[in-house]
Picture 1: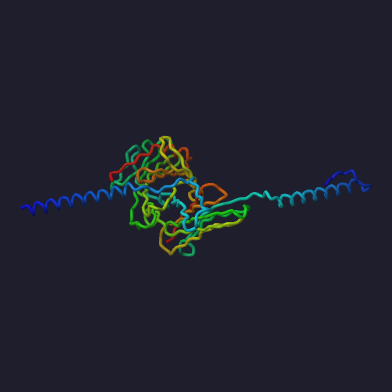
Picture 2: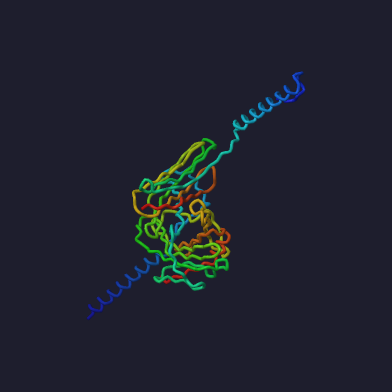
Length: 211
Length: 144
């Protein structure tokens, strides 16, 4: 009888520990510290050996290249992903974006763990006189590789740090971009609208998720 | 050098006009030589990134080039080729080039074996003649 109770106790403890480890691992994954550098950071490369020089990498615009199919969403409706993945969106789209609202949920594949990668989870398109894309992405891969998320560090009206870029060479139709971090997510706003307008919109972004 | 007409002769206005024209030409040539030999010629630099799938595999380059700086001018380019098989922009390959000299090109050429996907190249560029890193991104291209 005693042996059975002891066995039951040990088994329960093992299950609890396994659960704690699993929950801890998931939490650690989703709360990983992004190794983001500010683009203005000076690098004293002349005193550093070639082998030791580590320059921050800049990813491409975090969106999907080529034509994207969107599912139309009722204007004013909060967008939730069917699988609970995070969706960044504008809380109150301005009157200038009074056209349709569409959402795209990307097909997510396997990414090698040892390679730097940025997975696009969702894209919300706001139409109006100009279009605005709000993209939600997540970084994976080596944590010791610093990267930057824009050409210039800016601060939004709500005090949140962000990075602004003009990428006319690569994206002539929507050259302007504002990027910010929300937990472990990278949120990108891209448009032909000015950086100032995108910064105003970025301060209005909310994220839905049931992860 | 003076170009006045005080010394003109009886050759008259025709000769004076020719003399004035010659004088102006001499002045213009001298002026041009002066500009060409100026030690204060403007230095310049530029960055770029590009790529394509010709001839059948992804390849491209990103560079920082400069001219007219001192011989100690130094620049570095770190280039990364990315591809996006489904929805993840993933590093495919990368490289780095460091150059020193008054006129140089820190060019990183990248290529990879064929795999059907969209590709692009980004670059990080630093130097001792401008502050902070500068960044480039090539228009994405398809390999299929």
